[in-house]
Image 1: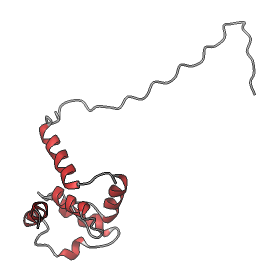
Image 2: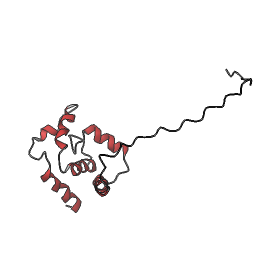
Image 3: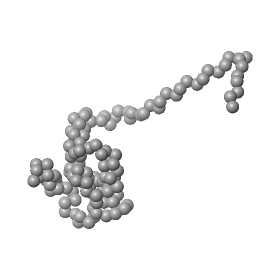
Image 4: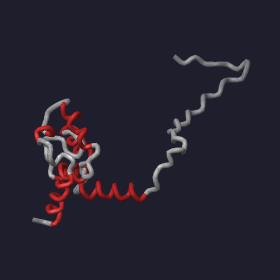
Length: 131
């Protein structure tokens, strides 16, 4: 057993669902949205998701993502070699950044500038009809 596969088992002891009936996480269709609620407060959600993505686990809810959501993510990011490394790196970056100021005004996306309207001909000028 490699070091990476050994650590992939360690997180399971802290999983919020560890004592639940596993069948509750292996449901189909719309029931998966309900099943992933247990993941919201799970302390090892990221490790669980990374495990499912790295091992291409096709069925069940893992790390708060449904089967369909994981398939879509894998399709969007075929370049990712290690989801565990990517997600851990993102977590470290988020922890290193200063927390958001809840009193600061929300940032809004500025609409792109409109191109300038064509100049109108001066009074008495001629206009051509294009049509």
